View 1 (cartoon, protein in one colour):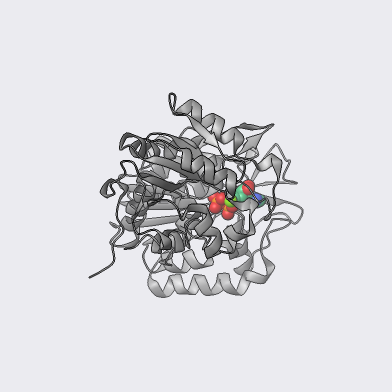
View 2 (cartoon, rainbow, N blue to C red):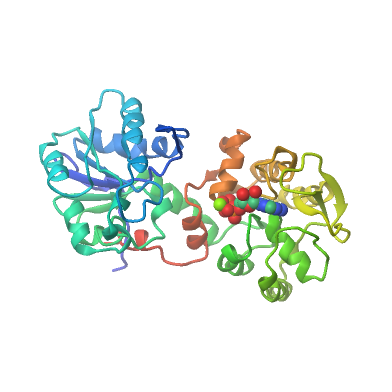
Length: 395
Ligand code: ADP
Ligand code: MG
């Protein structure tokens, strides 16, 4: 029999201590959560477990504490925000994710109560996928739920070793939604299927580019990544960010696209500035970038061509901003692509930390069919690679 991934609704949770791996890796400033999107995204799963009468144990990593306690990376502000969002539910933060304190808090939980374990990455066992650490963490729990899609591509203890120790395991609602949306693109995406890739580096996204070239009708490339392709075509990119050591790779991707009959569109014009702080963008043709200029956004003619492709798309996957969108003077290309992707007649998915930040900033999130909470995870999944945190859920 083929292995399956159960959904949280298929588990009996009443009176069961239920370990839920969530992605509460939120931005903090002065000890406050500045964007609670990820906390809200986990609420349906947490609330379902509570309604079913589970004793809920939540766990997450936060930032990069490098295997030791970093007080600024405590989940305390997250617990406070969660308690506000859950209103009448009591949320208890443990002083550490393992040890006597955590054990006592978990043992004392009653039905419908929530414990939030302190930052998983305060211990080396998390990243090392250490089974003993996993056992200490959640070995006493009767059910395991993973709702942290954004962490599913890492073989870490809370997403990989731990579910192997708990027979009653399942995907939470957010995890399920992510897998369903990305599965639609992985298998039988409706055509035309258009992918838009941008962002900082080609090297970050080689795998997904290769995989997409097998599936899409057109691949639109923008952002700093496009500069590497322009340079590979022999164009002068001035002071633009590009990867000198990836020119051969870019050439080989371009010839793969040609072999597969995939239209690979590069910018035909760009917005340039003399530095990343520039405030007055100049539009130039992509083959006339001045030697002292940086290409920081796609240009209006490129926007038009990309829009034209997206206008008829039946499926769209977009990852990576088209330019240095953090500087408002160079955000236009990204916003134009965001609007066009969202408004396409087909199924639109956006993934990637910075791309998602860009669409939220412009309030466009609600216009996509799916906004992935996982950057790296969504790319690896689309690439067709098995994600450790997904594989570990199979029963
Ligand atoms: P995502 O997080 O969506 O996957 P990346 O992390 O790959 O995206 O890249 C996002 C970063 O790339 C942003 O900080 C953006 O400013 C930068 N970027 C995009 N285009 C350019 C460009 N032409 N020049 C400099 N930086 C760029
Ligand atoms: Mg990023």
